[in-house]
Length: 357
Image (cartoon, rainbow, N blue to C red; front, side):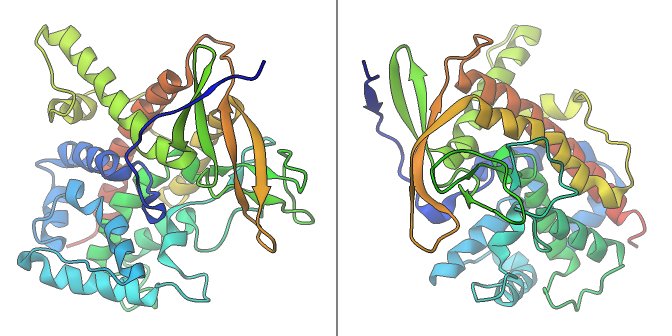
């Protein structure tokens, strides 16, 4: 007997807003970094370059400028007028065109989740403008190795804003790993001779989670990871704080970020030079990206003629072998990655700006 499918009423988000962790998640990561850096010389340098803007505020901007792609507007308060001008020049230098230097391509890399691939060696899903390369580019600008007059129009203030966002993106599993399908709709490991059809980091798939014997429509697979596990992670963290303090804690309280900033996450430090951190972070989160897909089955895969991306399909939760529901596992995973991202962002900016006057 086929399982029934229940469709929940969800907040409708336009396709252009498929953002890594969404604004709440990015603010969360930026706020943790702000707290980690408070009172340091790095914080003073950031404040000077950003005219007092916090990392929590900066972290959402690279998604906000996407509105310009559709003829929309982007404005900042008057105190940030020079930064707004620089950001618009960055957008103009990397706006939609036939060039692959398109700012939306800077937010992700699509390493195949089938197989045991690392970021290197590998070809499919990687590019010279993916998130690994762009983090390193921004790092080079801040260190002075790349001039602020570069063709990408990434100045030091813009570099900080981009890093505040990209470090969050690279800790979202669907921003580093993608599923690839054969022409018959089967998952496989692509290669140079057969790249298959990708799912755009889950954007083309509909996630269906189990509720007993029912399949519940949880919306677009990628958007789910941007938002729902973040909200659930905040609830998990607030309960931990409450258990320690014996006081009720609002999940939306700043106490959540304070807790994350004060308690060192496991395995956040990676023993590689700073220029290799971005690649190491991808390899660190790839097992989670694989599990995010391995806990699902894929069905009803459809295609668009002459496209290397699938048109649509279902990503359906399997009965969990470990007894942990997908939504619970996802919240646990995001809690871990958001905390790592906050600590790593603070460490990256400290390294990048240590020689900055």
